[in-house]
Image 1: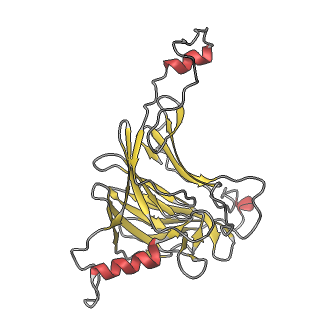
Image 2 (image 1 turned 120 degrees about the vertical axis):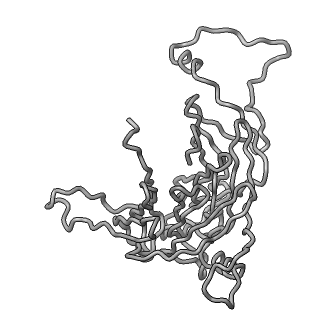
Image 3 (image 1 turned 90 degrees about the horizontal axis):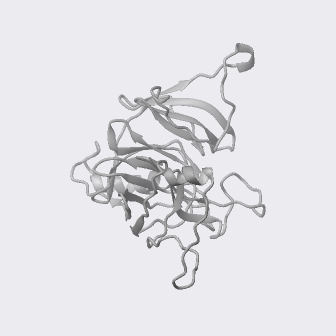
Length: 310
């Protein structure tokens, strides 16, 4: 995720030649392959930094007592690096998420800078993780916080026999636990996240879904709330490992893998105002029509680029 002038990476999967082949997303991995590393790339200093949980400074080469480092002539490339501003040393504390992959993240910019991390899966099983966290990004400090369900103060449903708290619990159990999904920040509502697709916790191995969920995060209080919505139109079919991005007032969904294991290449737009889905029709034969259309794919990434960024 992009936070100010920082690129923040968390977690992931290390693959090697020993990984066997199997159904997409159902391989089981060891704890050494699933990482919980936090990496930060500072665009100002053009440097990567791996953040220790206890905030320890990077190890320095051993020298004898009183020994000084011998000066040497720097190359042109080294002089260019020295002229860049030095990246700050971060101290990290709080409850850090356990190692995971196939999770999703987004940026929250209300009253500070926050990284929102949700779901995913850990090593040794294919079940999705329910937990979600936020990390506050300060000038030199990083603070993790586990999110808990917020308190419901109003009825958020038409059925008067059910309480808002009950509906929140039901939504969390059925729809909130996911992996291989996407999360984007809702335009003009920096606290709200829109979540789509992925594999939910249903059945022995879960199922690929097409569920759309809107979550409001109060990072300062450490809580989240699932908001009701009524999207209409032609929604995308169930999928996992797709890409998503916010383009103006639209949520854009592209590609992924269907419930049957088919690799997809369709494009869908959700207008976040009236909550209307629209499918962009691809040409029947792109080669004959002369209109370019991306080939089907999954595990790809999408990002919005401003026309003014040149």
